[in-house]
Figure 1 (tube, rainbow, N blue to C red):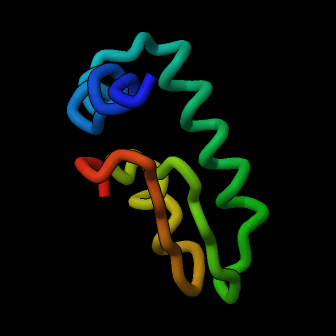
Figure 2: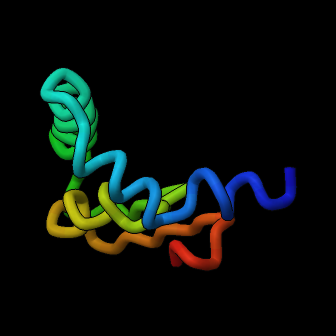
Length: 77
């Protein structure tokens, strides 16, 4: 289990998954980000747990005061 995240969920693998997603999955992920953006004030700070390669951070950064992402994978951060 120690190597599970390094082998199966590393940033390169996740990037490939998100880049090849089907339209329905892409729509779901966009709706999820849009919901957070709509409810986020530009004076708030954000902490993303399990940030991966930064897919969500890139989208939310312009909408908040500050944003920090952490991830168990040292390759991702």
